[in-house]
Length: 152
Image 1: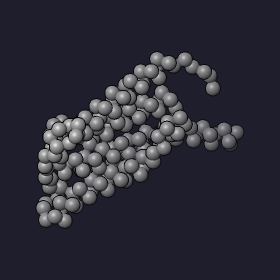
Image 2: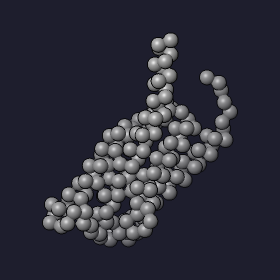
Image 3: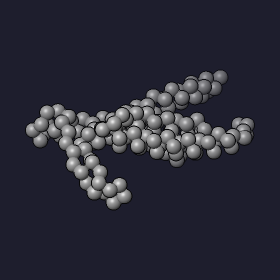
Image 4: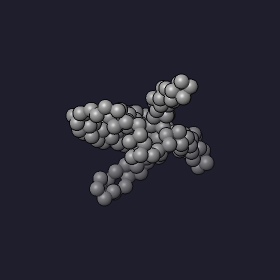
């Protein structure tokens, strides 16, 4: 493997990934009252992770982030489903929400809504399915190349 001088790419990736992750968290928490939420927050997080995979390579990021994205997708789907079923158990229509204001240490008086639980499920589901699809496509060509080399 040839040594490349990609210091600018690696430096900018650190900055851009940090900005993308911060913005995705903002979108996630703003989502139940303003544009954003679990879906777009999950896409922004996936974009940051994909940028890191492109910059640093599959093997290095797999060591740093040993996450099974398929399991993350299933967990997100389960959380979103349970958020809807929870309202039925309490005698309300499916996916009904409620909210309350809490005084949090750093953030002050903050509204927390049960929609946030559903958004968490959507967030995890979107990150999980997006990363599973992209990594499957990316590693599939490597597997085919390995098979072709083994046959030769």
